[in-house]
Image (cartoon, rainbow over all chains, first blue to last red; front, side, top):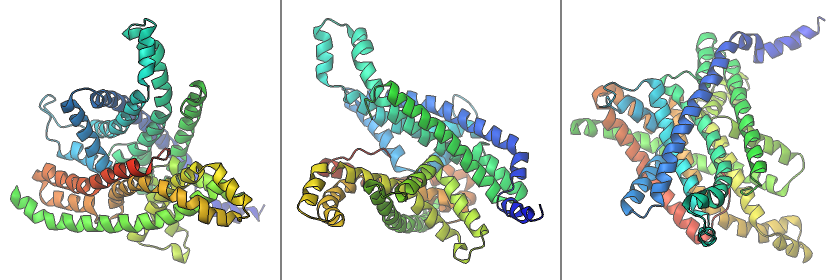
Length: 234
Length: 222
């Protein structure tokens, strides 16, 4: 028994799982918060992405330019600066009559950021359906809704879902940046452990494991989607 | 307002210069590591290929912010002498590792995009595996790697903003300092910071798109 103790000491020295267990509720809240923030930002980004994708394939040059400008600005500036601009620098919104809270600011910045990347994926999906498909559907007498329902959407969705899931994984990782403006999420839980116990190993290896867990779930989801969708994109 | 711009501009430019330096060092080191990892993965070197596969998945599955903290806080904790670096080196190391995963995937995709017949033909005229790689596969693959590298460079530039958190006075940090001096001009200051990033990144993105149209696009998920 006596020989066992030094080796245990070494593990406790490097990674004190007892401290981690003590902070487990924090990490749990962090994971939940990260998933909530990502989910809301995902919905926002899909709305923005779909709208701007439709704008960028529209006939109007003005709409195309607005969408193109939005995507260029987002892609050429860091997310951190976008978060700071929306949270710190945006004055009180006229409709809200108050400043955004940290959580709202963070989610809006994340949504607008991811929206630009979603937009490009969705646009590529729309453009990948050949003209002949639409013409073929019209020639067998399908109306607009039938064409969308049976011909275009099934193909577009099959092509778009796998890369959208990949972008969602990026969004989840990016959500760690909202901890900069004081939003509590998984990374923030790590910061709590660091500041209360000065234990960076316990703090950040656990955080890394949490993100890896989420990433693995996304990976399973994406391979399931690829199998379900007939590997149209794989 | 113009007073604020005039008085903060020199600091922001200094920050931008640090951002440029970091991004330049990182693209060189990150590409070197990524090139080796990508080659090993494409050539399916036994064991190493698996190890590097794990390396890529772990780095891809965690945010860069976590890499930065692990490199900056954890490695010096090990008390190994050559892991006792200061913030700047820590930032370079973390960003280079992060970059290498992107480069590795591009290198692998580009090598795998060279048609099999090319390798078979080279091997059948008696070239060794290395000769075939050196004279036949790589010259074709490198051409395909060029356009996506522009996208990676932009990812690095944007990534440098995060190293402000460990106290490196790059562009965002310079902006934060300026914001503390002029708290009522946050919109102007962060607007200027964003503009500087835009002026640095946008031409590269345009160049990337141009290169794609010239050299073709390799299908790789970033």
